[in-house]
Length: 485
Ligand code: 6LW
Image (cartoon, rainbow, N blue to C red; front, side, top):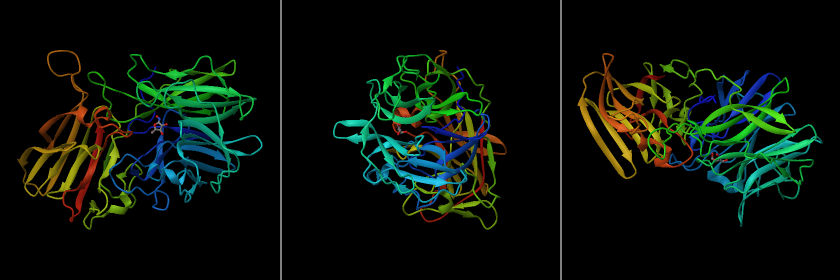
């Protein structure tokens, strides 16, 4: 199989739809804003970020930068000339799922309506042949989690009929991620099971009626890498799409763990692509069906455009809210009283380097997994320091004197094997330092496992960016470079 994701880095829970020759794909964004990145493709293999659905405060509010909530798995569909997005802001899970719509998928998206009275995650919208829209979701009830379904008015969020239990999967843990499809005379209900860790799997059932009875595919799971030596693990949470010529494809999430047991993944859950053929009206997944082009993703931003590029995000706050153009070039990153003002982007490569040119004494380059797991190189007036935060430990590892007015802070991730044995002893090696006259000086070398999901937990991945060092004075960022190594 191809070990290359179509959208690398923290882009989990992909959902896809097609309008004529154009495909649109969305992923979860958790505590980061703007929420729900939207990608476009015409060939399923090469994708471009065209916007983010939830940009405004009337669409998404995240109470702090701490994480653990925010936007869980979305579903995108096109129906009746509109794009429909349904997802859950876990911070407001008791309000129900939120539904927004747009005529242009790049935005603007509407203010959301909520599915009041519905409690759970992973909502799906499906329009039946008679035009009735159905909400299917992983619901919480007294007995735990159950796949539930009810007719809905997507324009208001109102539930229009009784909630029914749908197919509950094959009996593995954490049945979630339901998506409903119709192909020929069959309805299909696809789920994720086994949890989003190593046991993750995709299962499917079919029925002649949405009300059931559901027949489980005898070949379930149709996708799982559990107990295999594949470099891609945790495969699950999938969505299907039909191509203009009647072929089918699947997008799903996976991770690429490295290092010693139990394996560590740092860039989060990424989006992968497979082909799907139909045998006896059951989908058969072909992971080798597509050749995925190399992901470019390098950036060199001097912030000369009036709008920030779509890939800039912030924990809990939209960067548009805490940045402004500097009077003499660059961008000012203004401290926030409520959130961490971190102008960040997702890390998308296994080996990479980021450089940030900041005015001396104003900024800090941060590699963040979550609020309790991050490393940084920060600029004081005449010095730069490497800093690491792991849980309650917050340590400056080294400091060096620098003289220039603008400082080039840098963090590099490399994966070369170290030591005497040809086995990986770390996941990646993080070098934290600075550049002077194009020469890198490492202040500290940090074991990348500390900035990985297997240590920190959670659903996200690494992001890298710049924030002010002072609670009252903006950072001036003149240039941000990120490239694969
Ligand atoms: C998501 C669930 C899952 O809601 O993880 O991998 C949860 N699948 O379906 C968070 O992404």
